[in-house]
Length: 312
Image 1 (cartoon, rainbow, N blue to C red):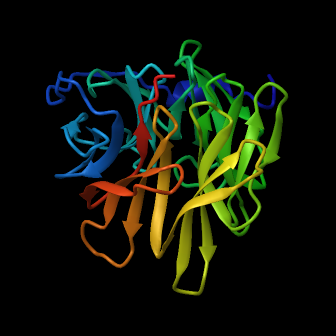
Image 2: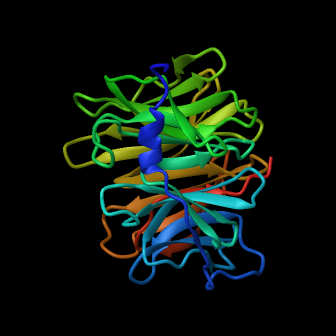
């Protein structure tokens, strides 16, 4: 057995399958942007159009659902869910159709899952020693047909969180931190063909990178600590080799998270969290890649995760 392969019995212990019918999700057309928010007792997955219209509730289960990601063909979503197993610290991996129906519980634990371009695999972060607790996360690629997973570049000194998978299936964008001090964060490019990794960011603390639709550039969030009580988050774009980094938006004491590209690569959507507010402090925003046209399309109280249907 290779060192990179997660033992089969361990994954069998985690493997859980179920089908659930969700009668709440609409059968009508849904918006291309999906996100998680709490409008009731549980966090659920919602969809919305880029102009802020057509809000639709996709999932409606008695569990907290978050971190939704589209499949490339726009027919499926994968997301995390809590409290589906006896261990409340586990982040269960769930797949549902694009309307949030026919939920299938795939694994008991796997943090921030996302589909491969062909939809046959899922990449996620996994803590081998203390699932759901941390602190040492490594990336696993799990084959849905073979029901088997393999670690990718397992490193006991860092925690790695997968952000995106390139359209050609050859690369992962990953943000990582040192396990001893939990900072700073850096963005890496993992080459799945050559089994190498390259650091793409140097300054500040960088995270949550996404490939542009054409793949030659990527977006990420960079944080600068200004003082003990203030910080600055910047939404940045870079060439895939880490050169020509430019920030299109800068906000103080406001978290910028989960930046995602529009299908044509002309815009970025992201969530801004205003730390000065106590209610409705999260908003979904859209901005042109050149930094113009900043528009707030939706405001809400809680959020984990955001994705824009790509279909490429």
